Image 1 (cartoon, rainbow, N blue to C red):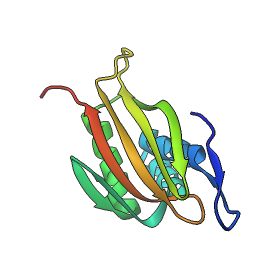
Image 2: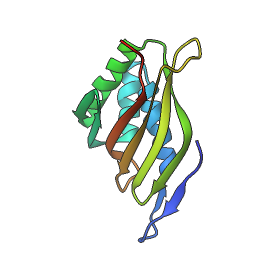
Image 3: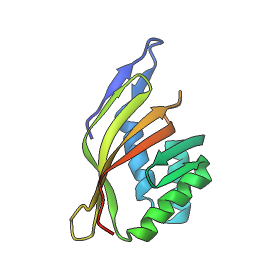
Image 4: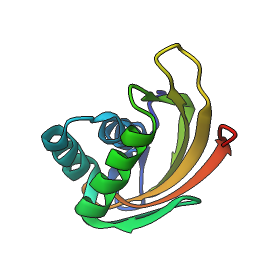
Length: 133
């Protein structure tokens, strides 16, 4: 991911790329304990997540959504797609879900809003490529 650091009006440094990296690390955490730790590192306690398939809030809701993705796509890994773009406390970035064979049947992009501490407080997710069911 590309480094995108911006200073706000109050000279607060926002590292959009680091937030996206923590986000993907949470989505790639497969073990329950590691997943909860990664979710806590990436998201505020009251974070919301909305995409076409899910609408959840809080660490428990996010961890459950991530666990569900791993149940549906075992052995798959989320990886960044393109560069992180951001301004103020908002970032957008693409991602794809990569199968063990290297194919990427699922791709999308997310728009996130960051809290003062750099963790994500809201996610609006979009799916650009999904497998036929």
